[in-house]
Image (cartoon, rainbow, N blue to C red; front, side, top):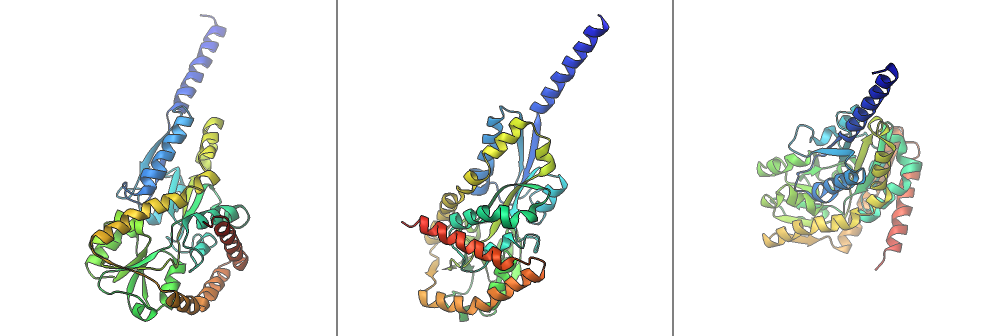
Length: 342
């Protein structure tokens, strides 16, 4: 074989090997929820299949949920930043202080609508939140429906009933809210709530309905106060280096199934995820109480100093424009809710 033919053959083999390697690219996704949760079954698993199909199999995914080595809620951000995983879904409030701008959506009585909160986060992300995600490609930011107060031994209907209750909290803003209402906030990962309730280490927790079912909490709860007083934010992000290494086609497919179109799905998704948890509590004979309008007004008034104090804490931590970000969230939510009036 001539040298020219040998070189040509070598180039062809190398090209074939490169194509094969590219076709076998597997991206790791981690999240902290059980594999039965809607975030896994309705969101992450279908999303990965859609992206993979779009790339004609060039990209495949390996998903690690709760209960796996990569499923720790407190490690989602650091794992994806370090490239231990390529994509991660996590809570912005755990660990505390890493996403102070994004976590302003957790402020009390801002909204109880997952669709409104998720839309607001995505709308203000380019101008106000991007600084918190350096080194990451943000695929979606979103939030859950208004959280409830769930207790195991004591029914809560008024602010006075909150005094001294040890309540699990998901974020700094919610911790401040609980403290101002007289409770004793306890920072715990979601996966530790069941045992803590069972052992009497805590008296209750704040959650929307869906994790109550996912983590089996109706077995150790009896009372539910429908507050709608707060929401909690989440990130779905990709290591920027992992993204940059992909082919143009793979990048295009990830972009196609992420962003605004993905964020817009969370309102309906969360309504669907919440319904079984509530029905399970009803079937178990639990007491579900709505916070009265009069009591809601009292809580809002009591929390005004807390909201001012929390904004100041965020500013003191280096977010000089915290007031501006909070106002942008308020305006976005108001516009969304006005546009979606039934």
